[in-house]
Image (cartoon, rainbow, N blue to C red; front, side):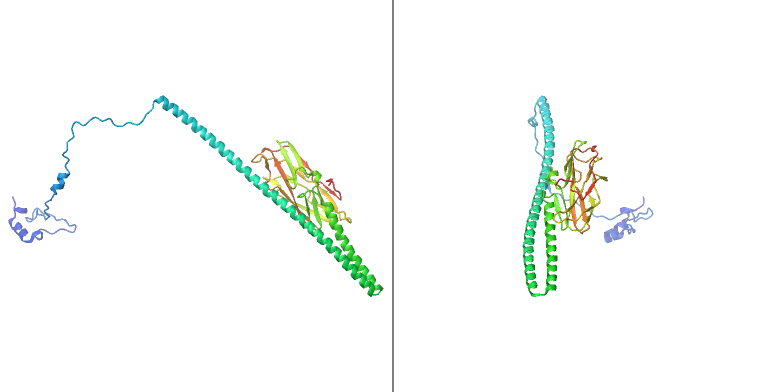
Length: 369
């Protein structure tokens, strides 16, 4: 047997002297390679470690207590009830759960209805307040304007008359004639203005919100042709799908001219369609005669409502929540507006046809107002 490894006394002597330096070197991977032909191989270096234990703590980790003849204690059990009672309780719970769900749905429906009614009520209150305020303001402004005009007219007449009297006394016959002509012109203008105001006042006496006036023009729905004062304008109501009631403006609308010149009224329509279908229309242009002294010129125009051949999303609703708007432009430069409303009871399509007509009666008041 070869004297290799620790049997090689010469190698062992080197190890005693040099330690691990006497061993073969490690390769690039840190590993010592052994060759069978090399008598110095077979010995590797390493550390000798002697474990040291804490005997006192080791003794604590050993459980030497022995339990014998332990009593047989039953494990605790959950509270139970007989199955018939349990099944009956489950059925009651299921019934009560269904009842609670049904009541919750009913409460939600009633809450939604209450909220909707509160919103509608508030909206109607606001609209009523606005209409009342507008009517009061218009009435006060009219009274103030009439008082100021009357006072100004009297003062102006007195001043003109006084100046004319003084001029007549001082100037020649020609000057007197010119003064009289000027007095006549002023008196004529004042008379025309007074006649215009009287014509407007006589023509537009009626229910607040059912007439409108500008400087030279106006319109009115006769009080005898109004069944619902809460809806300010032309208005129809339908029941079921085949009954219609023309509430406001069935006889038409009277359009007035307060100037001394004939006027042309041009009408345009907006908001009168539902899903592309035209449910309201009327004439687009007509003439209104000139005023005759204190009598305003008048022309009556009628309008028509067409049945809605389409379903609406809800029952009992306006076809358009804001209604249709008629804009009236006159040849004198005045601008007026008129509203029309269509209320449906059912959401299915109507079948009653058409009510009203797009007719014009120039120079006539057909409204009975």
